[in-house]
Picture (tube, rainbow, N blue to C red):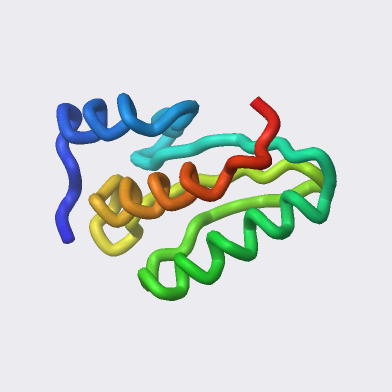
Length: 99
């Protein structure tokens, strides 16, 4: 797995609604909000199962109905295709997120 260049990251972000580059490091990030804790936790559970399958785990935090996610491939020190793949999966799971 190798780092993506700026053009590849920009192209990927065009297809990932609401995702953006982290302000201080080479990572992608997005904040999600749900109706309540159960919806937020259900969302995280789906992601956790996929992350384990991909052996690529997000950095995240959860406070009640909010989930903040940061993706970076530590093995290569930045954004790789693994991050794009997991971000796309996350997008496919967020149908209950509040816009």
